Image (cartoon, rainbow, N blue to C red; front, top):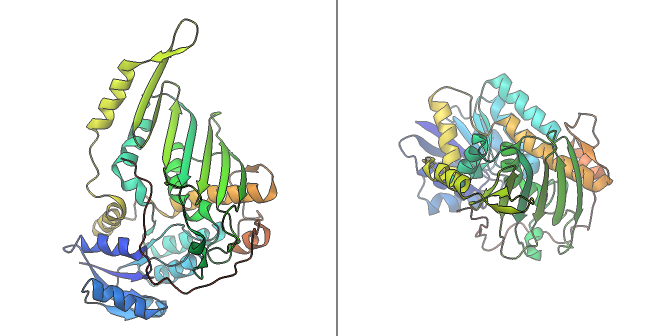
Amino acid sequence: MIRVAIVGTGGISAAHLAAYLSFPERCQIVALCDIYPEKAAILKEQHKLSCDIFSDSADIASRDDIDLVSICTPPYTHADLSVQFLNAGKHVLVEKPMSSSLAECDRMIAAAEKAKKILSVVGQNRFRDPIMKLKQVLDSGKMGKVVHAQVESYWWRGHVYYDLWWRGTWEKEGGGCTLNHAVHHIDMLQWMMGMPTKVQAIMSNTSHDNAEVEDLSIAVLSYPSGALAQITSSVVHHGEEQQLIFQGEKARISAPWKVYASVPKENGFPIKNVELENEIEQLYNELPSVPYSGHQGQIDNVLSAIENDTLTVLVDGYEGKKTLELITAIYMAASTGQQVELPLQPDSLFYTREGIMANATHFYEKTNSVTGFAKNDITLGGKYE
């Protein structure tokens, strides 16, 4: 039986809790931790848990009966907490984004390697049927070389969203919609296409004058193959209609799923390649479904690695760092107005948290700060089916 602690009992912790509770024969939640222990107590009561409650992460680290810790706290705490738990011999599953800076990622990866423990970064959309199947269709090569990718990470958040005490600042949230919302789509893009070599970007704050950070950014990525990708990250898009589109030499595929293939007429104008469309459609439909979806799928992946005594998970620290590196490059390009080349080096102005705070564009000063909302129900966009 794998014994689990959840640190941070805000909104996203519910997804972790539900996933762990779906595997009662494999794991047990033995501790909840929050700097506001009354929040943890409410969660414990809601789910009728038999567990201890702590307000200090050191109490979790010192427990010998905890194997795995889920970190569901604000981004600026991720590195210190992960290192603390890894040094104490615990496996770690940390929410997105991995941390506030690439330097912190390096610390986390080094701690995991030294402790010989799992460090997994939440990328739950990789564990959804439409995304897993899209990846496999891309890898099949049936659509040819990818020449263009389009990522629309469209979310909408009201003005009051940034009143929460840790949101809306470079110091504590680490960024705006590019880091904390589009991270899902950027993770999926780099998983499917790899890392670009050059990034150009612009960003703005159009609707949230209670936040230092951006609420809209647009980036263009250049790949060694000559392919281009564009990413729009937003919390100002009503309807939250999100998609990933890949244009190949022979066909176009996307999530939500759609396939379209063209061949040229004698004059170069397109006509449908029905045969290839049907072939790709058949491949997609015949691919197996994931056994568990979303956070449940990722937690199954981590539990299985622990049970099989392996450190191999789908989204490890190196994968988490790649995603953050791409986001950091977008911030650097947008803040400096210059094209950024990857990989970023440790002497980059944006490699450390302090460097980001000093050099990233500050749009407004945060004026309001609340410790929590009376109701904190989370609504989710991004239906890929």
